[in-house]
Image 1 (spheres, one colour):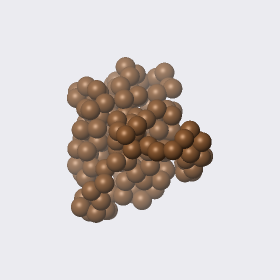
Image 2 (cartoon, helix red, strand yellow; image 1 turned 90 degrees about the horizontal axis):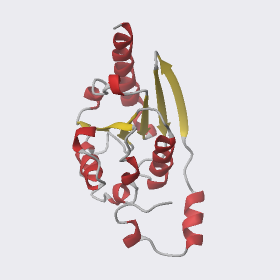
Image 3 (cartoon, helix red, strand yellow; image 1 turned 60 degrees about the vertical axis):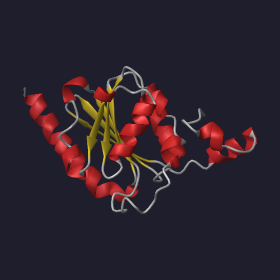
Length: 179
């Protein structure tokens, strides 16, 4: 597994320890749905987990179709001051998302600007990063004409927000499909 921006600075131990940590990858709950020509993938996993993020990023990177990824893998109800420890963002290899087929990264919620900074540090062009401070606004931000697949990386605590975003996206997809 590649290290994130500061992963090599903070990692300790041998490859055996890293291998045992890789085995701890928390269960991912996967949902897939199609709407017209678009595929929607929802990956619920442990919040703020570099291992879960790496697993989902690897899945998105291995695809060959035009993708977007929606980032919301922390508890939306958490106050922004609840945790100042942002190491989970920097222990994840965002650099791998800087691929031509990944057309858009949609960062959602109170941490949207933290995600944006992390993506910029990973060399992802700013025009491919979209932010939505309010989850309700995220459903209208997908550039559907440039996409085939939208993958959500989300915390299980955000199920309601994800369903609302997905419903808005699907309504936009239905309208796009008519054109």
